Length: 285
Image (cartoon, rainbow, N blue to C red):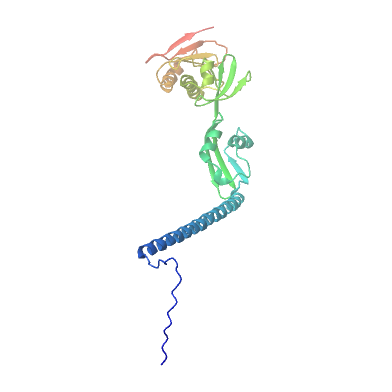
């Protein structure tokens, strides 16, 4: 057995390596890494979500645009039907409605269209309805002419409720009773007082018209002192019901021998019915 007495060569001098490991440091490094990874994942998810929202919004916009075009084509108005007109032209009612053919039916608001049409003086009532899929129906009730109203030398056509339908100027229509004595300014403004006076005159003409032919003229300056002129005889009415006063005259009429309606004013010229239980007659040449 051979034994060596050589000395081992010493290792060269060098800085001592720190080979000691800190467990808490490793955990901190791993935690920071995990946090960075989590942040990257969150950023990626947010990016994907934003991209998805943008794409979805674009798809919705395209769908709405395309569908609205289809709805417009399916529901656009092709026909506007007008019913109930006699004095007005149908085209005039369509113009008042301010609805064009081709307008989508679902965009029409009936209440607004009704207000626009009802603004015309001849229209009393109107009903607008949508008929699937391409028709708009307009049903109107017109005001009925009932009297000629004369104020400040101008003639106006009025309905039975005292509403002015149109201005006639110097023109006249003798098939309607003539109502005079109303205020022009109140007539144009449609005040309640003037309207009630006109209504009283029309009611008086209706009552007397059942008995006498010919055009009736009514002075309606006061509702409590109406004056009617028919065939040369003047009738005065008071606050009492017109019908009751006229019935009282009808009962005594056979006894009035001198009462004639020849339009010449011979015999009795005035019959005063303003007093209870009596009638005053006045003769004139």
